[in-house]
Length: 335
Image (cartoon, rainbow, N blue to C red; front, side, top):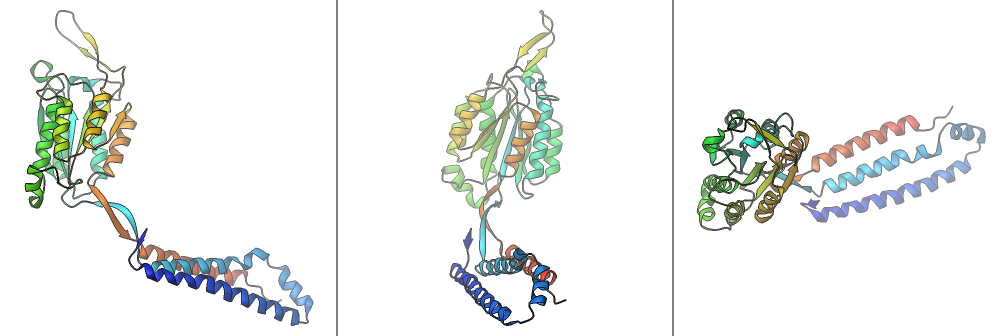
């Protein structure tokens, strides 16, 4: 917590001053009680009150006073705030292995549901782009704040024909995402972004999901990651699926074949580490949903501060009301 006017915290010295005055008043009250001659009345009054109740209203009053003293110093707390003109590029593997059912109902359906969760958690002004890939990458939606455009593209994701452009081209997909990220850089930062790695982090991030190893493409995964690192774009990777995942391929001379399709967490973790992102292993639909929800609450945001003066004033007001009410209810009354 930081303060706009830290010197005003000296007002907290009022708290020990009030405690001193309270103790002085207590001593005076005891002196007057001894001077009071009607001991039967005093005993009747004292017998109707629990001793600890005497101290609750003053304690609440002191807490309210402390909250007010802190409030006048204009306190701020550190939070993540939406970044202006930030962009997240979603990259989703749609290769044939995404039809594996080790993640229910299928890996692809679970990924689509998790991306929807992500879209629900990100700031409204965050621009989101979508790239799908198998043997080569395809742009589903350019960076936009229109969530309906991204949702429509997400709903159309399907498995490509295996014999035409199947496979998994992780490196090429990363390269395409970096290119899209560079074009999404705000005008005032575009020159720096295209010529240097000095562009501030937080403007562009890549969220990359895959469920298999690289099987096609021109670039190796770490070559694509190096492009992202050079552009100062962190890549957050998710390895989807379990080691027991399989798909069934029909056709050919041998009839249907069951093919194992385990994920490649080692490569995706290396991509995240090289680019300064974070790696997640999602073996269930719930874990995948949790990963996207967590990233949705972080990506597109930068460290910032928010003032909490009004919250402290509200707390102080509530404490003062509580102190007054309890004091009225618990004050001793003469019979």
